[in-house]
Image (tube, rainbow, N blue to C red; front, top):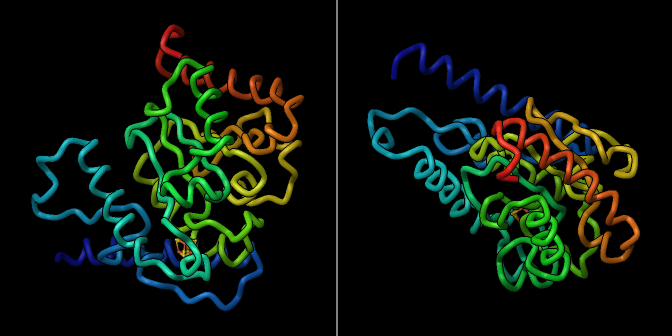
Length: 255
Ligand code: SF4
């Protein structure tokens, strides 16, 4: 390896460590150990692949992303960084098109998701699928993931230390997929990605930014099941996402 490459990798690792420390500070966690998964395979920062001498050069962009996502998932299958690793039935990694323009981020798996190993498959998931279809897309057109990849017992709220420990995986997923737009579903996704304590009610309805990517915040579908009167607000939020993607693609008819 050349000196420039070594310097580049060192800079990347330092950047990943700084990001992790920042995340820990944000959640008031001060006893978390940095692991290999926080800097990624081969010492790379989350989601950044090491350039090798040709093993991936013949792969399409989609194949590369599929491979990178598979690598992280395989790494995560053995993850027991927090106690949820002991109680999960299945890891719930993420699902969808790795080339998706739109990526949804929810909170954590529930019972159905834990049993099936796929995010948003219960009643809230069916509602999310309807929301996606309402803006002219199919579920398979988008990518869906959660902040936590393992189910909290009894569907309790994620704990700060669980978020800190699991966030590097979500960061990697976003870096690999590189969506044009993110959509945070509910309080935990919005507050975690935006580094804020502001309530979702004040964050929703407008675009924010996560690491340079526009991000809409809206209510979680599970909240909507309990508060159906707020469906109109989510529809307003999703129309903004639809229009934004339409402007990007230069055609209104697709979405
Ligand atoms: S929730 Fe995340 S950090 Fe905790 S065990 Fe599962 S994958 Fe690992």
